[in-house]
Image (cartoon, rainbow, N blue to C red; front, side, top):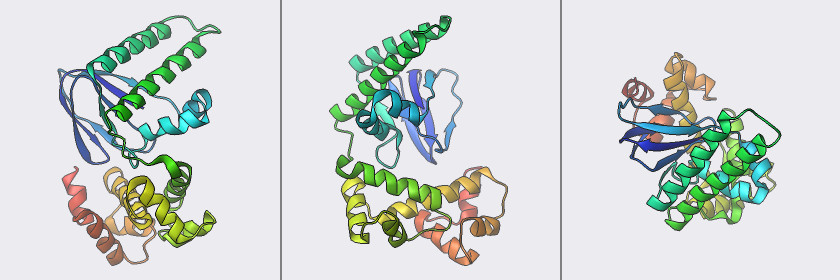
Length: 245
């Protein structure tokens, strides 16, 4: 999803972190990320929602992979502040997309909207690169994304880097190098980040007790769960839950 602010100022919360915004701010969010709108009577914007497959299929695999960096908060900040020139260009594309949506669908409509979205995503990604806000080394991007996807699928039962390295047919040292080169973190730190975020989702979005969440998160002992969460957040599970109610 792309959330483009066209008027006003305020704060948007993404995965429990607050980001200020103003006119020309763009938030790029992927599936599964928790975000919260803060009510603001003077704020307006445009919301564009599409699938990852849409990006890869219609932009091309190589450009698609690069563009997907925009929508991965582990790789890049989800916030981009557009320059005046790029913001005006983006507003023009948004107007064209809205105009196209008002027409009756014909054989050209989907192709035109795909092309406009391709240009939009490319311009925003180029802006990020030009502002030198992109910190990701893309040398191992494919392998990093494979590792990330495996963690997000298996985080409950699998919290050890060694197990993931075996699945990827590489050594733990190579896996660590892939992650460090890409985002300047260790493989274990990435696992902990993803596991902690998933636990936060359960604490905020379910009525399960902390003990139930501990077992559902793959911990045999609630005490170990408590220590793990506090080590990675400096808060107890209950403290975190109360602070986000």
